[in-house]
Image 1: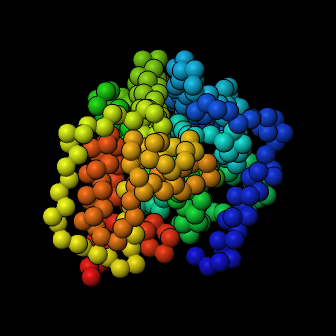
Image 2: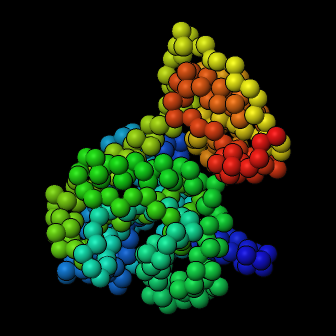
Length: 372
C-alpha cells in the first residue's frame, strides 16, 4: 500500500472522533474494566433473515443477556452500542467504544450461507485468509450502503474491494494478540461447554473492528440459514446459553489480565528455581528476544516488586494497553531459559516475542532464518 492510501485511512480513523453525535460523547473514563457490547444491525437493517428469523433481534437479546450478567461484577462497566431496535452507523459503533476508552469491544452477529453450513465463528481483524472470510466481512461491511451519507464517513472505502480491506489492518495490529486470546476463549466455550460446532477463530477485514482502539472481536453465533441452528438461536434457551458462554469468556479474559499484574500473581515456588543453563548460545544478530508476561490496561512501574521478583522488566504503551516484557537478549536459548524462569514465577501463559529495529516480528520467521 502506498503512503497516500495509508494517509487516507489514518484520516478516516481520525474523522470518527470528529463526526460522532453529541449523544455518544457523554461517556467518561472509569477505573472499572470497560466492556462495550455491540448488537449487530438494528432498525431498518434487519441483518440476515434466514428461515424467517431476524438477526438484529437475536443479536440484541444475546447482547442484553451478556451485559446483564457482566453487570453483576462491581469492577466491570458495561456499555451498549444499542439497547433497542435502532439503526446505528458503523462509525458510531466504533466511536462509542473509543470514547469510553474501553478495554474490550465485542460485536455479536448471526451468520448465513447458501448451503447447510453451520457452526460458530469468532473473527479478529486481519487479512482475509480465504474467499469465505472475505465474503463474511464483505456482507457485514455492506451495511454502510444503508447510511444516507455513507460517502462522507467512509470516503475511499469499498466493501467489495480486497484492497480496501487490507488498509483496515493498520490500526488494530497492536491488539491482535489480545483479540485472538479472547476469540479463542469464546470459541472454546461454544465447543467445550455447549457442544456447538466451532468453525474456529478467523481473521477478516471488518470495518467496525478496524476503527476500535482496543482488543476487539466479532462473534458469529451460528447460521440462521441452517434450520436447526436458526431455531436454537431464536429460542430463549439458545440465546441464554450463547450469552453465558460469551460472558464466561470475557470474565476469563479479564481474570487472566488480573492474574498477570500487580499483587495477584501466583506465589513463587523457590523449590523449582533451578533452570538449566547448559544450552549453547544461539545468537540472531539484529534480533531482540523478550518474554511477554502480561498485557493489561493497568500501568505499572516496570520494577521487580510489581512482577513477583522478576527483574529486567520493560513496558510498551499501546494507546492505553500496556504490554510487559521480561528480559532482552539476542540469544534464543537464553530467552527460552528466561521463559522457564517466568513460568516458575507464576506467569504460566508467558510467551517469547521477537523484535527487529524496534518492531515486533514473527518468532517463527526469525528461527527459520540462518542463525549466526
